[in-house]
Amino acid sequence: MNYQVFVGDIMKLTFLGTGGGRFTTISQKRMTGGFRIDEFAGKNIHVDPGPGALVRSHEFGLDPKDLNVLFISHAHTDHYNDGEILIESMTQGMTKKRGLVIGSKTVFERYKQWGPCISKYHKTKPDLFMLFRDQTLKFDGFIIKGTRTSHGDPTGVGFQLKSKDLTVSYTSDTGYFPDLHRYHEGADILIASVLRPGKKSIKCHMSTDDFKSLVSEVKPKIAIMTHFGLKMIQSIPEQEAKKIETQTGVVTLAASDGMTINVPDKDPSNFKVEQLKKK
Ligand SMILES: [Zn+2]
Ligand SMILES: [Zn+2]
Image (cartoon, rainbow, N blue to C red; front, side, top):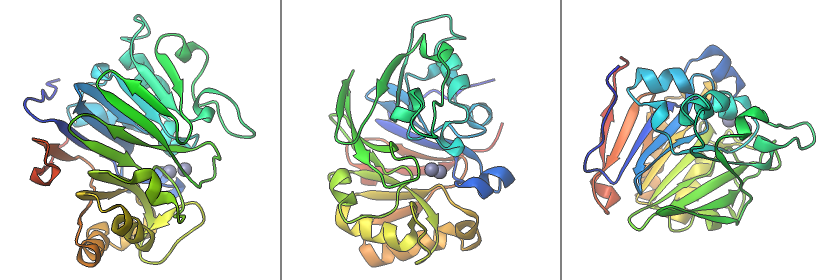
């Protein structure tokens, strides 16, 4: 297996899945492996490893042993399913004390009917950090701040990552609420779970119209939609993204399985998009 080596980019995003919700996940109409943020302040981060995260990493040429950080936003299977095997990858088969797992309370502990998502055994080798909204963790070369969600798992958390060069925000699964933009202010790149098309909001998830409101409030340099439910897939996410771009003036992309976005310098508008082929 030949793995990708990144040279010269200050960040590379790779979508190992753009499906979300139970029915897209069960049917695998879109993949559900979450996404990787590579070379962010020199670190490789896997975000929300749903079913297939390990397999899709290999298929798209990313080495799961190269991970430094695993982020799991909440205790729904489309976000945590492959978490334990990625911990095994990050710790070289649980032989080394290595890596950091950041997640909601329910990733590490039981809370009401939620979690834990990882076993005691899998907690023994990596460093662990339970992230709450508004809480900040300084890590080698970057800062991560927990952002609020309004979702089924009450401990669910998104993030804002800041390095000296770039700020990347991820809403995770959340319904739209009037304060949401405050958590993502200052994002150069805003990644969001947008489950439904048009106005079709459901409790605890954003629709295209909700995301349009958030994009116009945050005004990132690039907005990226992912985590599509079946209705969104039928509506063609690229067309939904185009509507947001036309109405807000912000470059808006609908992620696709295997899409990579390379940011070569401090100006994210110089990004390059590439579609990886499965190996
Ligand atoms: Zn989800
Ligand atoms: Zn969820």
